[in-house]
Amino acid sequence: MFCKLNSYSINGIEAIPIEVEIDINDGLPGFDIVGLPDSSVKEARDRVKSAIKNSGFKFPARRITVNLAPADLKKEGSLYDLPIALGILCCAGELPLEYLRQTLFIGELALDGSLRSVRGLLPLLCSIPQKHTICIVPSSNEKEASLIQGLDIRLASNLSEVISFIHQKSYLTQCAPATCIKSPSLTLNFSDVKGQEAAKRGLIIAASGFHNVLLIGPPGSGKTMLAKRLVTILPPLAENECIDITKIYSLADKLPTDAIIRTRPFRAPHHTITPLGLAGGGLHPKPGEISLAHLGILFLDELLEFKRSTLEILRQPIEEHKITLSRANFTFTYPADFLLIASTNPCPCGYYPDTHRCTCSLNSIKNYMSKLSGPLLDRIDLQLETVTPTLKDLNTSKSLSSEEMYANVLKALKYQQQRFKGTSLHYNSQIPTCDLKKYCPLTTDAKNMLDHWFTTTSSSVRSYDKILRIARTIADLDDSAIIDTVHITEAIQYRLLDRNLWH
Image 1 (cartoon, helix red, strand yellow):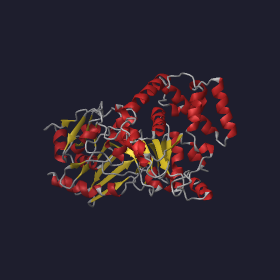
Image 2 (cartoon, helix red, strand yellow):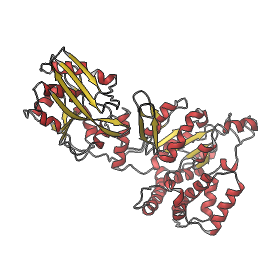
Image 3 (cartoon, one colour):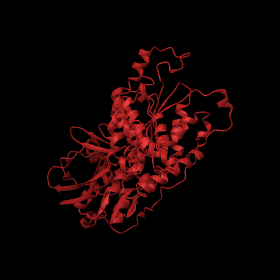
Image 4 (cartoon, one colour):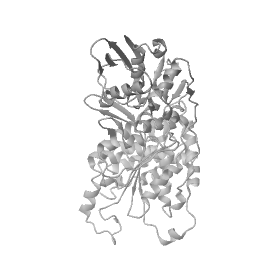
């Protein structure tokens, strides 16, 4: 006897339809799974056989062949256990075929027949069409499944419950929809950072326009403190953004206890991270750090200690807000729309340009800064200098707080919402080159100043465009529709390395 069930496979964060075909024939008893399965799928033979027996059903002592179509697409994971088990029972005459065709079954089977959670359930459910009248998933995946709207999702704890439900002898609990929105409590605050008012101003601009930042300064000047607190002045996530981030963490098997990501991620990988860890991939492909930082912050502390080959991976994702991993047998695309915050010392000893404390030669300083390639540096909008705080700074009771900074950010965000209404853009940093004249009108003096800066420095055209986008954000903070000289002047001040300050 033959039967066919519907299932899905995950490619990146998208679901691909898979047909689970089961055929039982006379012959020597055997159980084969074909269709390019990986080891976890092949091992389903033993899990399914034991689960059926331990659930009180007889396992057919016949020739069983399971085909996962299309056969040229690699299948991985344990989500096929439940449909395979139900298909075998259907071919054995235990279940009606018609019901199985219109229902989607997802779940890993334990040897005793209980259902275990599967990785990547949320992106799978988000991608499937509405043709399935009912979707049955493990009870342990309830919090993930509750984020899905428009699907009749039922929760099951074991194989026996699913079979009893199919026979209409019992009821499976329907998954109640949940909301992602929850106001996070701030545990960090910029008021903890004494001094660094100029750097804070730069971070207000970065948060307002989603501009990438490089913090340069001596050890102990507060670079890490500033970076960790930047998330406190970013706008809260919308519900669809919460779901997008949760999908990525579901694929990476890094969901929190409540299975919902409600705040913007802050990822800070160590400088020893491999290119694979940063970009993602592997034998069983998972998102890397740049995808886990999607819609949040990727903080690279001690930037120049990272391997150059690892840093160069960032160039394409920064521009395209996604990363495509191409291997011999597959191509995956993961989102990577992150705000890059990096920090570095200005020289090997860390104290340049303080000639009283710096012991480095000019040649060693140049070699140290040359570890950061020009193309990657071009993609970093703001280059902010941090200075060692004085005793007066440390003893002051007044310091710019996150609440005060966020009030300025919110003002600039409102201008951008009005400006980009009806487009796919959200922030000034996303303005394409072809639209810079439209969105960044300049006064004559401002244009002359920018042109003069470009002709007298070794900056690239990309840096020229960056200045315009930064100046647009500064003008928004000043309630100005037109970019004037004061805005261009401030924007230029944030391009330290374009002025050959340290190399």
